[in-house]
Length: 616
Image (cartoon, rainbow, N blue to C red; front, side, top):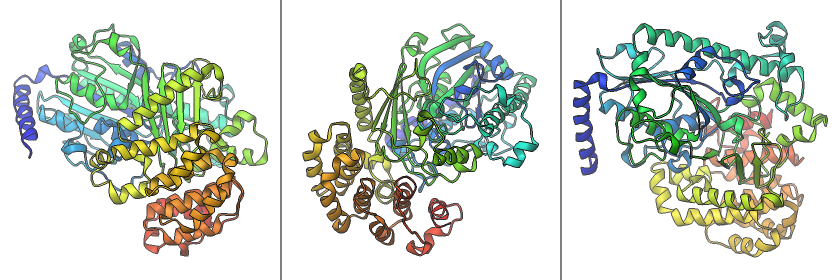
């Protein structure tokens, strides 16, 4: 134990003794978390949503946060952000279905540990799905976990999670659709404007609203338990979604439907003095998952640890006027199961900026678990048949490197203003703020996951610090995609000649982002695809050749697969194969014999999900 940690441990032990003597002085906390929810489905936020009486009751004796955001649009990354209070791309926890558990940054702990040291009984019922290796912090973490097992008078923190709205609840068949009518009338549904108006989409949306009612009834039972135990006057209750909604183009994507979550905080009568706003109010300030752990600790009177990136939005020394001035939220999306992408988002007020670092990776790129939903598969069928409108087709077509949306007039993010001269100043401001942010946190996704697996995941934060200048340089190369090709072609040539493989890697991604405008680089890219010493650099060169129609990249990609050194490297290559096969029209034959057998042992591994799709 370091001297610093020893001092912290002694302080927390003293605090624990103090709290034991004054148990009633500390509030209790309960988190009601429902999976896969955005603000679009609750009547508290949206006139087209459904009523949730239990949650609405919490709001009447608490606060409704208008702008609460998950930093990530998928479970494990979002939950790790909550657990640690740190940006996932900074600590190496940004990939869903992680390839390796990462350590806590700088010898720190998850937030329940700090509550434990202050005398709290901490329980989790029951979902974990974290990307960090941390075993200390919960007194109970199971389907039986309850605050009722604590010592008499001991303060508690409890998480109660439900999967009633989870994506899997919409994995029904056409036969089940015919057999099981929804309570919500599908004919009365207001569909999102980018969805086709079909019976499947209407039924799916209606079923999802019905599931919200089930969630409300589920939490009503726990409210009764708290009431029966005489705890409501001493217990803060947070209700929120663990990330955004699960209808297509929601979960997994940094659009509002993937990140903007409901958050209602019930304020107990005995702790109203910690809140400097009238109960029943709606809070306009922006809060994110990185802020939740600091807020709980602050309400409990515990100093926020240095590893946490967020700041409290409730409790002592927190002014609600200051909270209401907060107007920014940062989001991130990387690999989701076997589907690879690299997207960052910044919302400031009603303006939303999205940076697609690989814009040619279409949103709809096949993802086995997503496409179990009938709405997803029907949407793809309609795209292939050519019957979608221009707005409905956006999901299946390459994006631009930058997207800018005015949410006050375009809440569903379908009208990209990035090329609109009237918004040039806003675009420039948002671009710089996001660029500064990813550099300031040492965003590790600028390296391929296979590199992080081999070189960084044993201590991601330390790796980021050692490579701060390099990370900034790689982001600068990636951002060459934001200028005109004629202005950056010389810089791209220099990057392609770099001794740093990942500078060459990003220069090739930029060439693919420019597409046909960069065809003057075909000869050099062909040389790189044959000769480069780094396997993934050759893959990016082959991908560029395929995307601009220079040649079928099959031979390069098959050779790269045979030379792949890790499972994650092979998954990255197969991701390019799926893109080039499904959206560039190439015939690329993949067999299991191309990939080492030991990587295919796990039935649900990411590599098998890709192989099953490509081979079958």
